Image 1 (cartoon, rainbow, N blue to C red):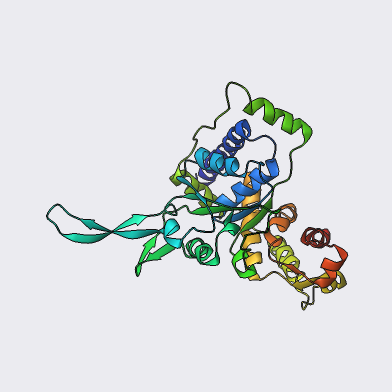
Image 2 (image 1 turned 45 degrees about the vertical axis):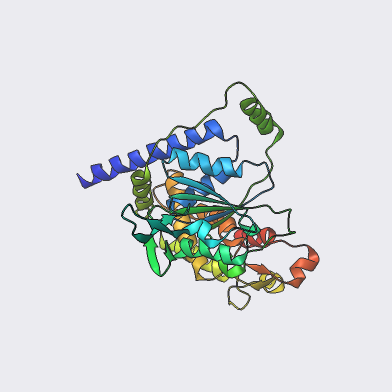
Length: 327
């Protein structure tokens, strides 16, 4: 009986995942890898930083996934004059019918399941910190009172890579709080033709709601049931340790081009990501292939190239791809 029950649950999870993929494809053209990475973030309860030039449907991606999953969605447009209270909320002085006065808390847009922090690098560090505290602690503190955020709570933060004037880059310590760093590239010509056909006609396709917050939490719990073999754990540890120039696993290439490597959080995130990827791909167990697939978005924002790399034009992506070859 337990075996039959487990098989039934597995089929139910796979059915849910397949319908999510199909429904997302009705609205989003191409970007299958990006959609998969965003779903991994949701299943792992991790926040992700989405980097791409304007017009690549970053907002549409986030809102579509939120609608399909039945999550309460809020979009926050970050600007230089945005204050922390604009995100977390504030206490308002209210007057009752009998003339009495009291403070009443008005929650901000942070009180949702899925937050799109649009252009997070356009707001000062003080406001960034308010969001990042909520991401880490899953709570906010206003006027000395702490309020928990409802689960699931996921933040998709976007950045425009081509604009630097008037921006406030996130420090490395804050970047480390993001589970994934996802880069969105331009669509192919065929994909762009399909985008034009879908969005300039009489009707624009809209996604249907398939799940709800409780269903998403069940999928998140299912990720923890995916086996993680010792061989995969060892591959994760060796990969992360190989990014550290002082490690015995570091190659000459790493010592030449990396200033600081990834910390233990990278290993934790990789262990979660490979389980979620295996679940999304219908595999009964995590494999080395999932480690290779998750390495780039996990490590991209967790290693710091040195002056040698900058001078020779070697990017984080090239360094990580070199490390992946050794897995």
